[in-house]
Length: 294
Ligand code: GLU
Image (cartoon, rainbow, N blue to C red; front, side, top):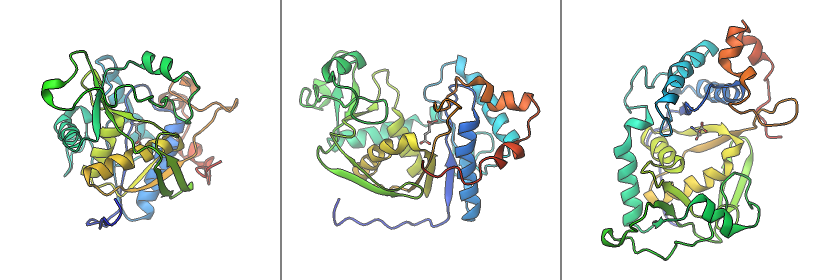
C-alpha cells in the first residue's frame, strides 16, 4: 500500500477488553486487561468491553455472566459494553454477523480470499514439518490456492472455509508499544489464514479486525501470543482500506513451572480467588512493571 496514507479522524484514546467466554477468566487475563485499563486512563481515554462470543455454545453462555461479574469485582470499569450499551452497539460479537459478512464479501470481491476445503488434518499431513511460527496455526501449504474460481457458480460443493491469500515473501512490520519493532514474513512466519470458517462462523482474525475498526479502537492491548496475529490482521486492514490501530502486547503470565496460564488453571481463576476472599488490590500490587516483554 505504498503511497496510501491514512489520517486518524478520532484522536481520543479508545481501548478495549475483548474476552472470549470459553472458560472462567484467570489472573493472566486480568493482568493484561489491567494494563489496558491503565493505558486508557493514562491517556484520558475510554475503555470498551467486547464479548467475543462467536465460539460460544449454549453451554458456554454461563460464562458470560460470570465474566462480567468477575471483571467488575476485580475493578474494571468500561463505559461501553454489552451490559451498558454505547454508540457502537452491539458489543456481543454473536450479534454483529452483518458487519463480518460485509467485510468478507469485500475481501472476496477484491480476490483477497479463496475457498478452501482442507481439513486441519489434511493441513497437518501436508505440512509434515513442525510449525515454523510461534502460534498454533501451521503454515498452510497452499493446496486450494488456485483450485476454485471465486465466482458463486463455481464454489466447492463440499463444506469450505474462506482463506486469506498472504503476499508471500513480504515482511509485515509494526512498532509495538511494549515489544518494539516487530517483523513477520508472510509465507514464512505465517501462511494463508482462515477468515470464515467451514461452519459458517467468522474467524477470530476477521471479527477482531472488523470490530476494532468499527469501534474506532485507537490502541489494542493484548497478550504477546497474538503478535503474529497482529501481522495477519494488518493485512486485513490493508485489504479493507482501513487504518490499523496502535498495538501494545503484554508478556504472558506463567505458572511456577513456567507454563503459560490458561483457563485450565482453575485455582487462579478470578472467581476462585474471589471466593477465597483475596483482595484484587493485593493481587495487583504484585504486578508493578510486569507487562514488559521477557
Ligand atoms: N477474544 C480474544 C481472546 O480472548 C481476544 C484477543 C484480542 O484481544 O484480540 O484471546
